[in-house]
Every structure is written in structure tokens, then in C-alpha cells.
Image (tube, rainbow, N blue to C red):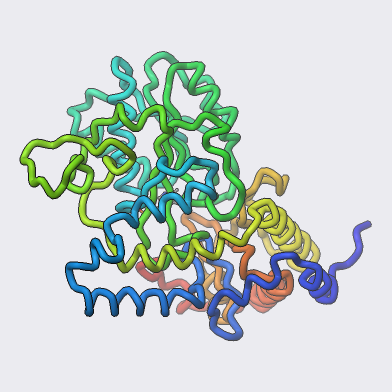
Length: 413
Ligand SMILES: *Cc1c(COP(=O)(O)O)cnc(C)c1O
């Protein structure tokens, strides 16, 4: 018999939370329980001022700002901040473009770095954009390469001598399942393949050790746990041993060795800068930098422990309060194998999530039937988790979700 979990239990957990003070760093609308920071992170209090300052710099200094404020160096400088969070060295990470475009850049690079092999191996239900990009690359290359997708369990056996690159997302967007990055990277290397990891759902929510795991390439977004703002620029990682061997497929002038020589023939920059394409988005970089600055004072091991504890509390209270309503856990049963979210499948999941949002409990829905509850540990409290489950119980018990207006699908879900 486990003890009944009351709100007082959650309050006591907040009182003992080493990260409890971090919530003050964010502006959150009063009365909202925000369980969607895995999709769009919250607004740091420092972001508006930071943006305002850079806008002023722009107005006053005009084009001189590129040198005076080193805007041109920001992709690398902000990349170095991310490097610390993912277990990379300064100079191995750069901020650029979107995650999707960075997948294209690094897949193209991986295929060239591993000549004679033609297969991109991935997981069958990897995040769609990663697979779409691989499909587009295959078409561009007239089917000279192939995309092979298998279930997660079949990955090691599918690593044969044709595989050029293993492309995986570390934490599954729908279920939260975590791949064993070190083991799969080692398996890829034994098979002669490179490993390309998408960190979109892991960076900022747990410690990562790319270099220790021997990872070759990685990408990730910064508007989720890194709180860079809607559409914030993404980043990419290339292990130092590969950087100077990459001839970028998207060979833009910002990746040129001397962009301001205006040489008409491309020559790659000596470092990670060669993976830049066009002009950096300075305002977006400023917002991202404000988000990343917060992590300078954060121990990611504490972040991970809190993720696990929040998720565990959520599951236990759901089990206690929401039985008999057809919820099926869609996340790994062992919290140690789950990212910073808990997902439940329900045939009416979409409508249930909409009814919760009307009660100001914001989670999201992922087709076909998954309700996703994300726990960004810097600002989600244990009482939020407790109160969210009571709202869920209420929506289920009263069938509040069973109304036509909750079934209308918005463009973004
Ligand atoms: C969120 C996410 C993306 C988003 O890519 P964008 O190019 O920023 O739209 C890509 N991959 C994964 C795994 C994601 O979770």
C-alpha cells in the first residue's frame, strides 16, 4: 500500500526543492499551469530588456553594430554556451538556421564523410521533420542514397555495412522514451557508421555528454527547454575530429573563410563557422542568449532529478485519481528511461487537452491519440503537477471534454 498523495505532500516537495527559486526567473501568466515548456519554453524576465537593448544598438549604431557589438561572432559565442550544456567543447557548436535545416546540413556532411555507404538509418517514428529532410535529400540525390527506418529495438541489427549514418532523436517527442546514446553511438561506430543525434527534447532537461559518448554530429532546437523564444535559431554540433573534413552542401557566404573578400569561389572557414549559411538573426540570438544565461547557474543533474520527481508525482497522482477513464500510459514505465514529460493515450485525447486548456492547464496533443504533459523543471512546481491532475480528473469525471467546440482542430496543436 502506498500512502495517499495530498496537496500538502506536493507543497512539502516544493519547500524542499533546490530549484524552487528558479521560477522567479520567468514571467508566467497568473493562474496558468504550463506543462508545455517542452514545446515552447516560457519567457525569461531578462529577455525583453535584452531585446530592447539590442534594438537600441541597432537604431544607434546601424551597420557598425556588426563590429562594435560583435554581432557577427554571436553564433559561435552563443554556441559555446550550449556546448557546456551538451558535453561538447567550445568551438564544436554553432547556432544557425532551424533544426530541420541543420539536419539537412549534417546528413549531407555525414554521407560525404562516409563514402561508399548509402543508407541513412533511423527510427520508424522519429520526429517527422528529421525523416522528411532525409526523404528530400534522397530525392535530390536521385535515389543514390536510401532512408531505412526500423523500430527502436531493431536498430542495432539494422546497422550493417551499408549504413553511412545513424540518425536518431535522443528523447522521443511523443512518448519521452530515451535512447541509450552512448550504446547506440558505440554500436554505430563498430558498424562503421556515424551517429547524428537530435537533442531537441533533451538539451536543457538533463545532462548530456556528447564527447564522452563519442557522438559525431548533433542538432537541436532552442525554443523548447532552452527558452530562446518562438522560432529561436537552432544549433548544431560537429565533433572536433570531423570539422575540417566537412565540405558544406549549403555553402553560404557566412561559412566562407573570408566572407568580406567577396571571393566568388567558396572556400570553407577553418572552424565550425563553415556550417553557417547566411547572416545570423541577431535579435533572435539576443533572446536566446538571455535564455541560456539562466543555465549558467544551474546544475543539470539537479534538473534531471527534478524532472524525474515531477514525472513520478504526476503518474502516481494520475493512478490515484484518474482510474477507470481509459487512460493508457504512453511513456516508459521506468522514469529513469523517460525524458521530462509524461504522455497518456486516450481516444478523445485532443478534446480532453482542449478542455484542460480552458481550465488553464496547458499541455498538448500529438496525433493520433497522445496527451503530452511536459515538466520544465526550472518553472514547474510540484503543486502545479498535483493541481493539473485534479483538473484532469474533473474533466474526465464530468466528461467536460465531450463538446463539439473541443473537437475543432486548430492549425497548431
Ligand atoms: C521540435 C523538434 C524539431 C523542430 O524542428 P524545427 O526545424 O525547429 O521546426 C525537430 N526535431 C525534433 C526531434 C523536435 O522535437
